Image (cartoon, rainbow, N blue to C red):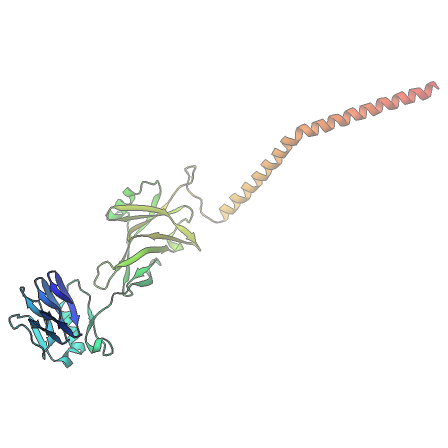
Length: 319
């Protein structure tokens, strides 16, 4: 794994053949750093110092296992020789996990069909995963490890986290409900993730879908964004998890938003009626001068016709 190690090599293994032109070892040719936890089952050969774990080392090596057919530095007290068959077992895998117990290392796994039957380190593969909390119905979607667990705690108004969220929220919206949302690994630490995280709040948590804002606080970093409302649910995308507040903004006139329902239908109907009245009134106002002109012309025409008929009648009488 390393020709000359001056750093840290921990929780490592090798099953391949190692050949060196100088010092050679199953994990490192020469070591001046930290080495601990793991094993070597591969054959090692070199033209200088050769060792099952390290060809030479100026530091004391941590616990390592090696196949007992290979030579190792006898001055290193933490190196353990084992039969190759014994190393290709679940028991040996359990020994490796016990060695790293309580430390921040990936655990070991065993399968007879993989890695020549020797234990290997679990692969950490993040995949697109959707986690749903059964109590609240809140969904979190993102690129997490498949073994990750969603942990949600409701934050009450008297809690410090709720007060901090409210204090940071200077947008004028009012926090109605708050939740602390985390995705954890099996050991209880925050699970690693990649990219954006999408959070969906179900309808029964929302008192009003109009002007819904999602406030977010994490380690003093505050953010607020308008929720995407679809099918009665509020969805928001974030870069990290933390404490989230469901906030309700007010309308432009300073009043509270009106909930959807029959009242809105009545309001809409009244608005349409008023609008129609305004349109009719406006049209009458614009047409009034025209109407008066037409009526005036009609009156003048009638007067002229009456005068002409009278003149004609008088003319006939004179004859």
